[in-house]
Amino acid sequence: GDATIDDLLETFVEHGIPDADDEGPFDLRRVFFVLDVDNTGEINYNDLMYASSADILERIAIKQSRLVSGESPLSWPSYTPTTDAIAELHVERLRSLLVEKFGSLQKAFCEFDKKAKGILSFDDFVAGTNEFRLVLSDDAGRIDAEASWDAMDIDNNDDLCLNEFLGLWPRRRII
Image (cartoon, rainbow, N blue to C red; front, top):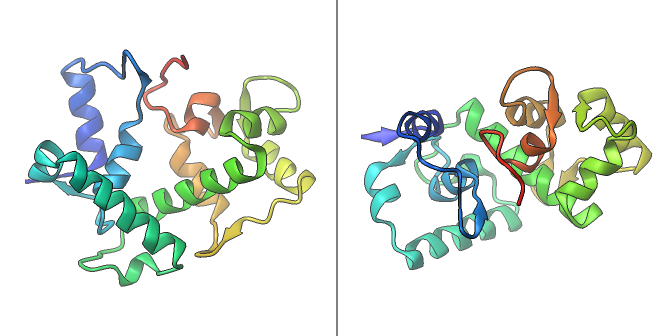
């Protein structure tokens, strides 16, 4: 059957699958985002288990070309919009914008974290976007900051730690 990101995260936790290897931590959410080419919020078991490197690279290229061309995900084949899929698109677009502006997500986090608490509130984020005159839009249109924030706030405490901001879940060590 098909699996959602929550299904995969629960399985990783249930079976004690490590969140890092010799090359460092990985982010299952980003892997899922790449494999979910049609943005249905679900991937087929065969897509996950048997996708070749070439197939995955092709999927990345397709997704990037669609986003860069400004093509709306709503027009992608077999697309059934889900709130989670749309929020994840906004998160990825926001992260790309922040990397473009600051050079890395970690540098962006430090710039927004004026009190050096290691935690960002949404107000800190808004203040930072205003201070740096960051326009939350790209070639695909407006980036929904609130939807992005909610999607990144994995523990639902209304604040983001660095790992949530970077997209590392569950809270993973930074190597």
